[in-house]
Picture 1 (tube, rainbow, N blue to C red):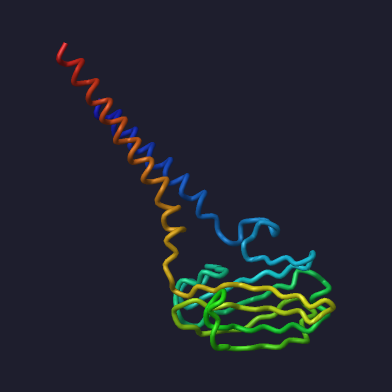
Picture 2 (cartoon, one colour; picture 1 turned 90 degrees about the vertical axis):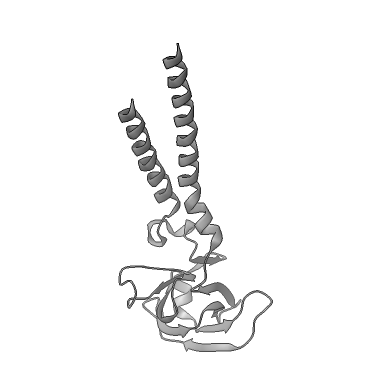
Length: 186
């Protein structure tokens, strides 16, 4: 009977791990329309990717950047029309209504390959990356950046499958042990 309990616990841990990995879908494993790093205005799409090769050479991020320090950003101009217009990029400290100082700006007129890239070195906190396509009408895209900030909502979502599995296992183990104890008393 103890072997059965151990097998149940092992199965539950495997199940919880499988559930958790479903919540932690990586940035690059979704289609373009569902990607949180894509901004779409009237069919004109841009995609932001950020990298910190000094910390994790293979990791790709979007707006939640895990550490302070040198960060490489790549903006893909998905729509062909965007490739033919001047693009302005500005990073501002703060987010929403609490914007303050401009940290850096970039103006690009030569991006026929559809890629604009650069680097920034930001301190911990919130920033906003603005992308402006200077066409008619002008297109404005916005990316909130969080540098080395704990996202408690994501952390909570990752813990839920494990907590539910452990609680279910505890309940099942309790029921099993009570049943076994009542059978032994007969």
